[in-house]
Image 1: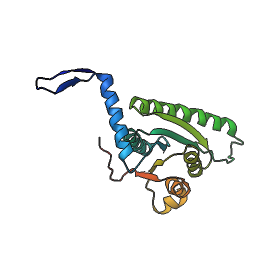
Image 2 (image 1 turned 30 degrees about the horizontal axis):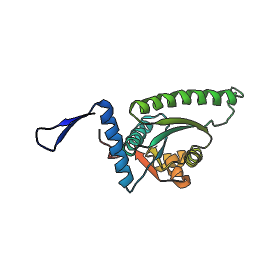
Image 3 (image 1 turned 45 degrees about the vertical axis):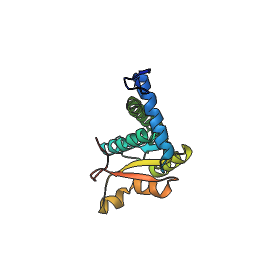
Image 4 (image 1 turned 135 degrees about the horizontal axis):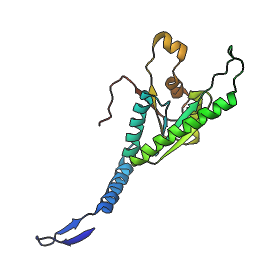
Amino acid sequence: MKIKPARKRGDVVARLGKSDTKLLEAGTRAALAAEAPVRLQRILAPTDFSDNGRKSLAYALAMARQFGASLTLVHVVQVNYAYGEMGAIDYAALERDLRVGSKKQLEALVAECAAAGVKAAALVREGSPARAIAEAADSEEADLIVISTHGYTGLKHVLMGSIAEAVVRYAPCPVLGVRADGRGFLRG
């Protein structure tokens, strides 16, 4: 920062460099966060890597940036055990492959978050998606869960269930459900 006297007596001119601008933005964000009635420090963003999951991640990312919060991306690996005509399947290897693949996809999303200026981490959990998401929110001490909904109704809802609906029931914190086909409030 460079400061010099202005033409008008008693005034000064301050010229900011790139690092000064970032410092001012951080100070402004901290001041706004201190005054805001809503304080978010940790946001959990479950994803199934679908387009709907991408949409909810956009909301989570925007909120993390606005509040200066960290973001934890979580994917739940769920393997349904069944035997088919082909005989037994090596479920341990299948789960391991799913975990490794999920971790790679999450790491790519974490890199996108970092490029957007948000501190992010990745978690891969196993089991029932709704319970695993709620447990992750509890262990990570999340202030908010941002999850996509697929908007299933009728028989499809009965047969497939609603993970987002169950997360709301089990979650230790507020949950924001982002509808795939719904109206949104995210600008940009």
